[in-house]
Length: 370
Image (tube, rainbow, N blue to C red; front, side, top):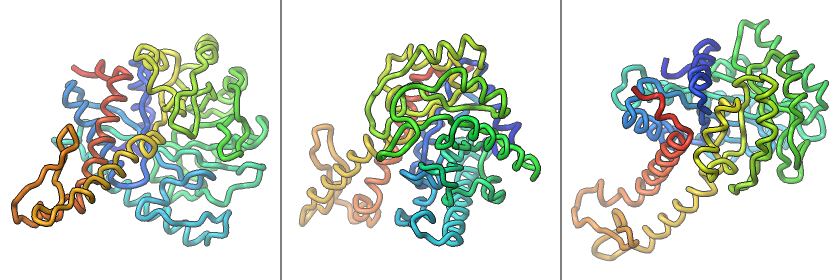
């Protein structure tokens, strides 16, 4: 079961984290290299700490009005249906990309694989917007496309642009739709989303703990995203409202909170990062730091490779700690073309893997080891 797609398998991985007071990191992706980096970092952590089963989430957005990840899997350029894009072409693109991504995950973490088989994945459909800012139904999502939903472990049904009562009603209807069609997925709700590009229901403040409690009770959803001051579209620390988490914990919500806004968490003292799991945060999304932190490193490496070109030595195959180019005089074509085709990609995978390893370490996942 290294790739969990049905309800029982997915729920068991969240429970594994909850029972250990751990927050499962869910790392976003928009291409295959990012998936590989996530799995590689998790697998190395599992190996180093003698962990037989290491749960980790991998997620992508589909039609998020600010940034769409899954549509970019093969190439970045696309047009949302809400912006005039062809709906049929959009569905083909999304479904193809999801199949490719899931096929890659399944093959990579095949049970018993000596390199990556310790990593057990949940595949999360993030920010599936029922409505867009302004309240109109979103034509960009495929929340009711059962063929696509079958490729995910969990779904975030995001109706945060509707009033609370409508959000509850629409969430209940979505859960019923899946179950009436023989599908059961781990479902995650959202009451408020950070305002982005001038859009969004809430630009400041935190979600009322009473609304979170009522939402979970009325909808029967497994998880909910609390607005606790962490979420930002920028890779910067904007704080954590501990009083909200403490109040939710006192109310006995349980391990049912999924935190967004990793940029606000990653620089906290380690004991505070780990405390989030104790207070009910069973999942935490992380992705924007990859393009905003690792991305510039890749651009700098590409520039350094280009500037390293020597008429006799070719391109640098690497760089010293001081930034001096390293050359290889071999005539091997692998070495000749490697810096041009592979070096930036390999750095990308390595840096994502290192970051995932650090996240797992900071959150205390070593306790799962034997």
